[in-house]
Amino acid sequence: MASEFGTDGRYAGEEEEEEEEPPRMMTHTMRERLSEKNGPHKTVFGVLSNKKYEADMRFYHTSSQPQYKTGGKYQGEWQDNMKHGYGTRSWVNGNKYEGEWERDRRHGKGTYWVNESDDQRDGLGVFFYADGGRYEGGWVANRRSGQGRLSFANGEVYDGGWLDGQRSGTGSLRLPGGDIFEGLWLKDKKEGPGRYLYMSTRKVYEGEWVEGTPKCGEYQDMPAALVDRSVPDGSFPLPELTLKRSSAVLNEAVAVIRNERAKRHSQPGRVFTTDEMDTLRESFATFDQSGEGLVSVLALVDILEHAGITDIEPEEVHALLEELQADPDTAISLPEMTEIVALLLA
Image 1 (cartoon, one colour):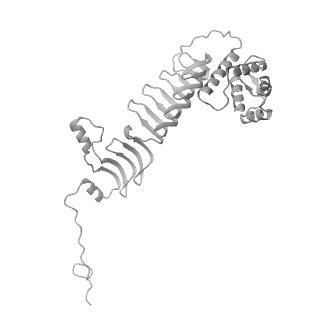
Image 2 (cartoon, rainbow, N blue to C red):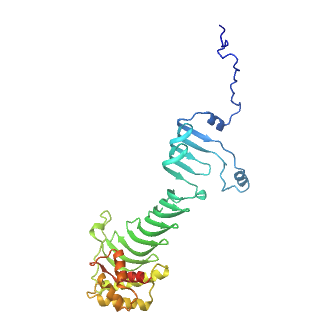
Image 3 (cartoon, rainbow, N blue to C red):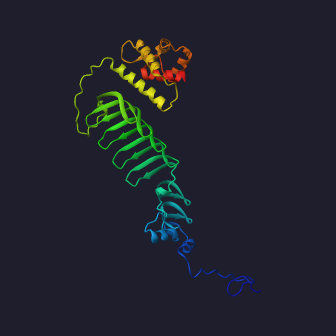
């Protein structure tokens, strides 16, 4: 019986398939494509000269253009010819990513350095500034937004809220000497209630701030629980306070400042005139028998009647107090009462 196979082992009648020889001239990129990449591997991507960069350097000796149009490097782990595992990828425009990869995409934990001129920041991330500063937190439309921590090059550290790239909301600022501010911010300035801890003198100021400046408040010895024992003790005794009705006087000043702030920044609620503020203050003082600057929430309806505000039903007052989670034992100050009335009249 005749064999169906030829002498060279191929099936009879089968045409011999010629193996395709690789081209004699191969670029680095072509060789990389032919290689099977698994495990640790270093890749340099093909590059082309940037003609605009060369022209700028020839005539102006400087250029904002990248030296190359394409290219970059990757050094790290591969799986099935895809970046997979831990690796570092750099681009010719100065951008760089170092961290975890999954099937050719950045995935997991990593750090991404971005050329600031090409940057489009959105979401959570870490940004390193040229002066040595560092920001870690939220971004929206290329601006710091949400919660974030900014370490300044001079040693200051801010941790708190951001809006449109500016400190806004609740936040704390720690200074290089150890002093700390905790409170509200608006448009990158201290605005509203806050306290400043003077660590070296072991004093604390707590009060109202307007456009970064303390306006009225209490300056007193720091509670022992807040003292930083690592800071040398430079404390001194405070003179005795002799102002009568000191708490009431302070609350009256705070109420005026907050009403002016509401007007200046178009905050929700009613804004009162000077005469209306005087009427509210006098009515409040009538029910502040102790002179300590506090009245019970149960007296709020009577205070409104005394002030001549008759278009608010008692049921509305009780509903708002319940929403504010105030119980019969709750005492309120003049600033707090003013804000409640402003909401009721809004």
